[in-house]
Image (cartoon, rainbow, N blue to C red):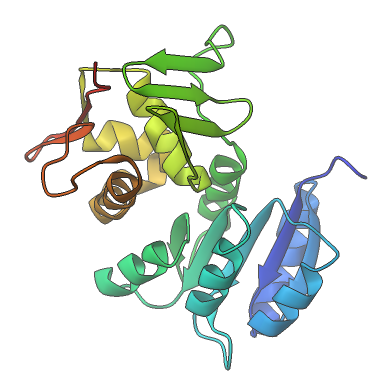
Length: 231
C-alpha cells in the first residue's frame, strides 16, 4: 500500500469525484477526495500526494488559487479539469502552476493517459541514458531533479524540468512542436501549442539572462525550438 502513487482529487461535484475515485482506484492509485481548495490544503498538511487533479470553478479557493498556493511550496504535478475550453483560461491555469489541462467532459482513457504522463517525472529515450547531463552552461541531474546554470541552481516545476531535459538531450537540434508536445504531455496533446508557449516562457524567465533575446532556448518560427547550451 505504501508504494501506491497518491492522487488528490479536488472537485465540488460529487458525481465527478465518485467517477474519479472509482476509476483511479481501479488502476491501483491511492485516492483522497477534497470538495474545496481549503480542504485540499488541509489534507496536504499530513498527506503528500504524488499528483493533484483539480477543478477550476470552486467557491472561495478556486483551482487557480490552489495551483498558486501549492506551487509556493511544492513541485507536485497538477492536472486541471474544467468545462472551460478557451485558450485564455488554459494559459491562466498553466501560468498559475498547472502542468496539464483536461476539458470536461473528458474520456477516462485520456485522463488516465495524462495521469501516467504526469507521474512519469522525466521522459527517457532508453534505460542507458546518462542521469546527469553536462553540456555548455548547464548541469542537469535527472535523478535529483536539480538544474544548475553557470553554477547557479534553478528551481523548476516537473513539466518545466521534463521540457528542459528533453531539449538538453538534443543540443543544437530543432525539435518540432508536435514532438515536444507528444513527449512531455502525451499523444492527446500534440495540437496544444499554447502549452509550449507558456512553459517555454516560464523556462526563459528562470534560465535566460535576457528574455528579450533568448540564447538558450531559441524559437524556430512555425516549427519548434532549439536548445543552445552556451560555451
